[in-house]
Image (cartoon, rainbow, N blue to C red):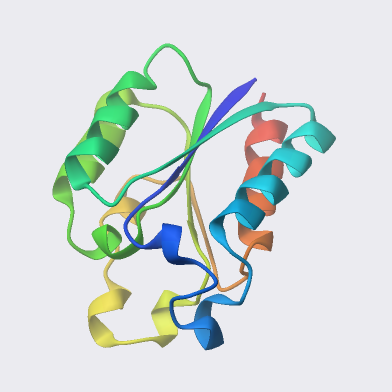
Length: 142
């Protein structure tokens, strides 16, 4: 099984951006954690990060026929991007939405997620552990 993990805008700033919300570990630590967990559950994983909405749409489109599932944290694009939602629908892959923080308990504008209109599961507020739970969920689907 191959899983694509997509991280969107500002995730490259982990450890720097609002550490009281997102923690002090950086993006490289997140990727290392994901890769270790992938080995443990017996799946292959590729991680991708971009701050550009069009790049995220392109990588989703390229996942078609190459991956068995997607884990996505689109960052702020979660709340604004119908284009990302449409790309996920187009490729039709099982998708888990992940957020490091509990978006439902933050600002009002963060409570709307376009991605959740497609995702099979949404995991919020568990930090890095949310990605590991998403991996385990998709691995069990095989």
